[in-house]
Image (cartoon, rainbow, N blue to C red; front, side, top):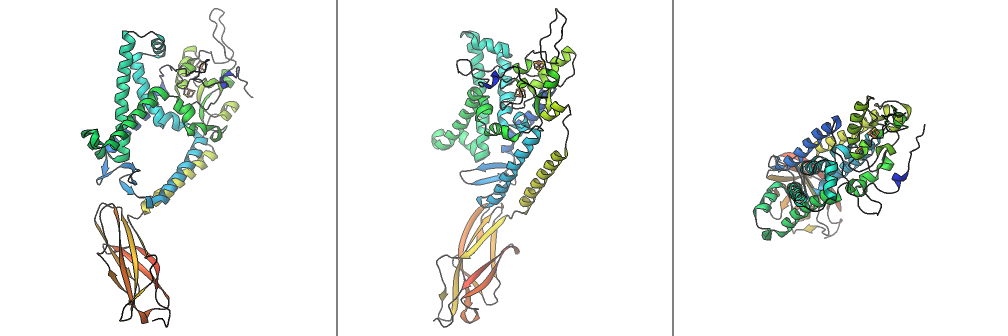
Length: 468
Ligand code: SF4
Ligand code: SF4
């Protein structure tokens, strides 16, 4: 059965644009109920992690840090270099597949439950607004009222708290980029001593303040690319926050005087619309603006309790499930997708564990041929570059598999500082009469602390027979 929406006018303009094509500020009703409580637990847990993680160190390294300027990345305390790009690429691929598969099965769970924008907006900034200005009706009244002492007091207090929160969030975000020690240094010195760092902190703070005081739901409904992708990612079988139109329609108000109840279960109280932070009416069907926050589920369940109807008129379900009255369940497809995701994550985990902590590149110095000494020794110059991803000083030793070859370092042998890269050059010398021809195969073994970490094959260039 195909449901025909009573009005299609909701498609004409976004919910936050008024009749004069101006921004219409949304004043969503304070949500309450089982789903809101679950979301609070998830949101405050994630928020606490976000605030605490920059202070956690493993072996002196930050737990997570993404320093784009110095191209240093720490994940679970392990340093990653641009040379680890293949791992990042695989991670990006897995993430991409994960997002597509996950969304096609579970809809916009990310948006409603774990997205930083929703968490901060709905669980930090909005509750402060409720606390200072009251619920949606009081907020609307305050917005429409003339400026008076009460409005000045409430608005100033709200802005002050918003600035303080933006400062905390801005400084924490910066700590993920440059490390908590650097942020501490920046806040304890004069801005003039480090203008770039100071501007970075200011920019982050301003960004948080503007996004959560001005941009708000527009970030989800217009700016976010993931939100825009929903139309291609969601299928009829995706689990989304959905209105059961089969059960709810035809909607209608309760006529107490005539003692009449509407034919469908929806009593058209519009509470689901009042609580919606993006201002949409979920009864119009799945919409791109819906962030799956579940506030409308709680609101409708409360209404259903009051009118003595079963809960779940708005619930997490698939369109297919609603049409065919089949509850959402784990199908073979869902199980297969989930297994695929676990498999991909397994591969990623394996690569992480197998990742080498010291890496070396060795090659003949480009543009050089060979050197010949008076006593008939042929020399080739090689360059060795190594990266030490550990926190310890590492001495690199090089061995060559040719029985008559000798290694002679031009400067000092390679010693690597913790989490640093370095390079040096050396000669390999072989008596001319021991060479196989113009090109001799050589295999170098790189050792650290007497343990082989890598072997590299290359060529040794010599003169052709008869060349003097
Ligand atoms: S809250 Fe429930 S009953 Fe009220 S309008 Fe929304 S769907 Fe209908
Ligand atoms: S429609 Fe419901 S789930 Fe979607 S954003 Fe609005 S309140 Fe949240």
